Image (tube, rainbow, N blue to C red; front, side, top):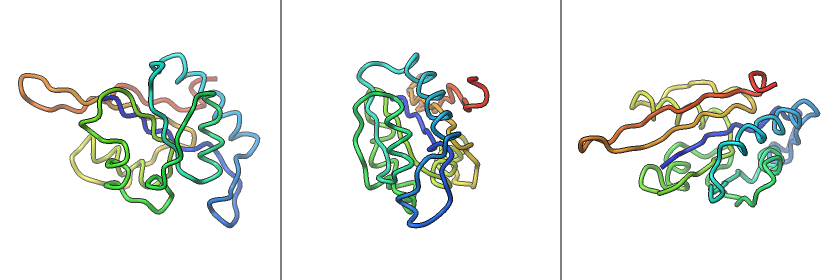
Length: 151
């Protein structure tokens, strides 16, 4: 399984939280990362986005069908998100478009075995793979990419 954690791009401040939209800069970030991802994602990748407006707008930049998943909302925890995407048993590629601190906590868990408050940059992507080698399950960090590196 490939699991891609994509933090929503820059959004305006304000309330209600779920209605916050991307800024002009955020739209540019989403477009940049979408181009980078589209050049690498398989055609059958499953795209899951939080119900928040800013994640929906980030997902729309991909130009692919996506599903809205309540388990990815800003208040969700790591177990909700991992269950929603089927990590690590799911076959294929799943893109999660979500929020901090949950995405950072998942990145830490997958890399170190323990949750910690790691930061995923706005609009940034962390790409993980799960594989079995000689009977041992392994998590591989395939890529970390941020919008400012794609320019």
